[in-house]
Image 1 (cartoon, rainbow, N blue to C red):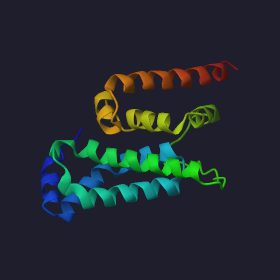
Image 2: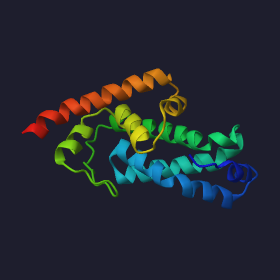
Image 3: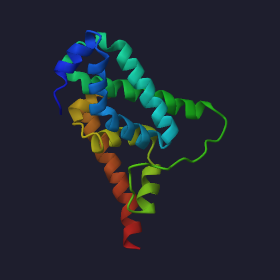
Length: 170
């Protein structure tokens, strides 16, 4: 993980340029995790924008300058979960927007298997695989125990393996 401490200190003092540098170091991870979790480029962009705005407005409240990355990912996680609840709150059927900019699925089967995961599982898997977070970091971000993170990831991977194995043998 990168050391954000100098720019975090400057951003806490009100430097928009320092915050911009911080954003430039995490924006791809923010977007990829949001896109993977929400499966909609428009919603992913909206969630990332909301996350960055909230982070910019509240960076003064960040206590530990070393934990900037996990702090902004916590904000993103909350925004993603809120957006996912909105999906279920609306009676309108959502248009399937599975156009994924930088992800290239090797097979339709993989895409279908990932689509069968619940939203929380997709979020956890995306943060672990795409974001490269450890179980301890994910536990801090998601406010759950590290052991729970590890067991959930194990179950998610097992579910994907079971889903994909028969299709690969065909």
